[in-house]
Amino acid sequence: MNETVRLVDIKKNFGHIKALRGVTLSFTDGQKTSLLGPNGAGKSTLLRIIATQMVPSSGKLVIMGKDANQNSVTVKRDIGVVGHRSFLYDELTVLENLKFYGDFVDAHESEYDRVIRVTDIERWKDTKAGHLSYGLRKRADISRALLGNPSILLLDEFFAGLDQETSSTLADYMKELKSQTIITTSHTPDLINGFCDRSVYIRGGLIEKEVKL
Amino acid sequence: MSDNTLSYALKLARKDLIVELRRPHELLSIIAFTLSSIIVSSFSWRTILIVDPLIVSAAMWIVIFFASILVLTTSFAREIDRGTIDGLRSLPCPPFAVLAGKMIYGVVTLILVLLSLIFASLLFLNLNTGLIPSLILIFTIGAIDFALMGSMMSAVLMYSEGKNLLLAFLFFPVSIPILLPGIQAGAKILSGEPFMALIPELRLLFAFMLAVIAASMTLFQEVFLE
Image (cartoon, rainbow over all chains, first blue to last red; front, side, top):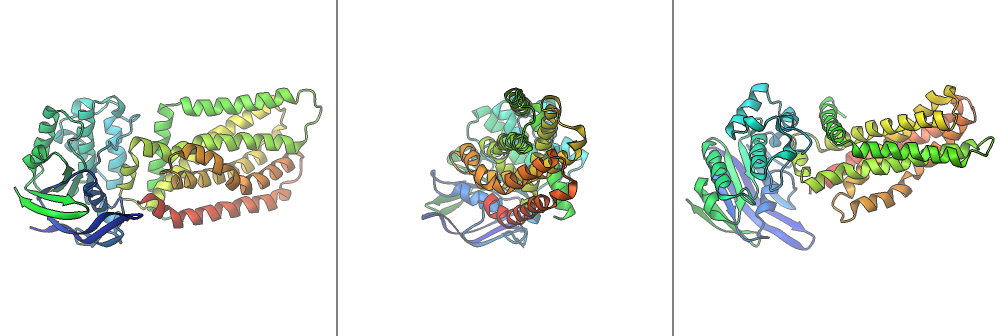
């Protein structure tokens, strides 16, 4: 197993609030990890730091063997992010959205067909993202995150706002992704644990426990 | 700016323009504001035989100034409101490319507004057509300055509660280095002074442009990544 992400004593302060108080954790390829914990535990902050969307106050983040703070542009090519909110533009069709994001990871034409097939959204590829239901939009967002075949997939509050059936479908898609390191946050462990092999419990900005599933 | 940064910026600007053109009510309302402002000015000056060029120039710059506020307040605010800002943050490109993309989008949109302003001024303010190239030049440089500064300010204020209101308020004091030489240069053009007479104002406008670019390149990454 190759290490894909390593966090060493990561701290993050927002003014006087200590969101993360020294997190040390590592992830390997193919490993699917859920970050669990109550609201305000620091799960999303940790995910945003791994996504290099947020700079830690101190500590070291290594992604695919590279220091993420010094190589943030390079390491972003290895990371696909599905946020709690969609990254798609309402006025663009699904395919146009994919092409916009795909241009930044030098995606080929065949790549768009591949990611559209993964989440089964061929029928909606020419529909404007603003006209999609929440579940379909989430599927399109997963396709977007898979562009460029990233080694790491980060899913923030992945099942929030989704019905049981859509959640199960999305969990099935995740199970199919064998090679990617998947890190997901949630405060509802039931569905997440269906496709994860490890759970990390976070409380008060610290790792409380790790459980192999 | 490296070739890659420019190429990423152009992709981002293209996306913004497509999004804007697919919801054209905002752009059309800005152009309608431009046209109606010039018509109202023309109406109010109908009894004056020769209008002071300084007043005409100031009126045109005020229109561009307010159009800039309308165009630029939305540039980062909309990304924040829709949640797509995190999509931009996750792009594998230098953070400055994102700002440069917004700047290019702002410049293109303001040039569209500028063309409608010049067209309306020709029709309703009886501008001499021989002055048009110089006017387009000076207003284009001003529009670029507004777009650069407005995009950076929009980025700085994007997390504020009342970002749209704040930008409108703060835009005026920081626009003074654009408005003063711009109005002066516009007045010189309308008075028929030779192009060389514009050099001092052009220098100021270019110096401001370079200062904003330098400040943006230094500060934007800190603003953009939380």
